[in-house]
Image 1 (cartoon, rainbow, N blue to C red):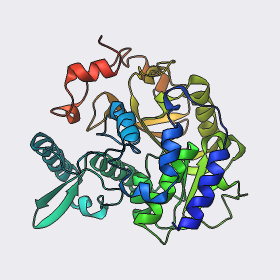
Image 2 (spheres, helix red, strand yellow):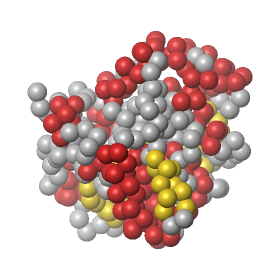
Image 3 (spheres, helix red, strand yellow):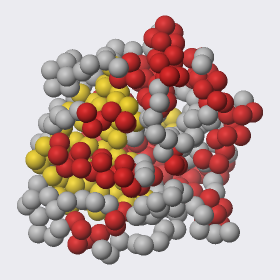
Length: 358
């Protein structure tokens, strides 16, 4: 991403207006002052800019880092190293030969990491990256098993862009669309161009007219307030963590849009908290407004974080048990946190951060 394009998009971003969303009303003058200079993105994964966009960086640290101009150490401590190596070894068992088909993080954004030797190969380990590698593997194996074409993939809430990068590395011809807050789209644009300069990225912050089916692109970055203007068919839709964080009216709009536009036999990879307690609506998975045309292929607590539930759903009416029937038995309160928080954040601290313990 060249400096001229970055500055152009930043100027447009400063003038962009949209309805702020409760939990995600976080982009203040401090943040805008920081992103005014593209050089500040060189360490965006340790300077607070990616807190709330990636697993393993506590949201409560975000404002302190941004306001003080401080950064995390890029090195994990001995307890974190012990934990992340254990998680990596679990991933090795699950993925087998698929492990080396998915790219691991590099130093883009200066992430926290640990360099680990395994079978005479060095792997750069990062907690969020393990989470994204696992998700990529799940998406890829279900797509292969079910002969999903993956021609057009939509991700609602794309973090800093890591999952998009990984899926595009496996599916070169896929048109990948990320719907997100405008401020986050700028960060994703920066990251995706850094890790793959050859990608053709169209950023609709720039108010460009686009024909999704006929125009040529690798990545399309779509501001969340604009998604309802676009009706095109897609083969896969992905959401990890953010549907539950939205106001109910926004969640309902997304689900209606998915119901209308996901192809028959298309897939929905959905990983969200059983209960999200930090927003006004406190959304629960059990209350998500699915219609009856879903076939549940995978339903279980997520591997790294067991307070999240992992679904792989297929869009069709060939189901023996409606998804709403299954959701009736889902938790009403938040289960304990999963093992990733061991030695990083105590259960007591986690419960306090979720507003479940005073």
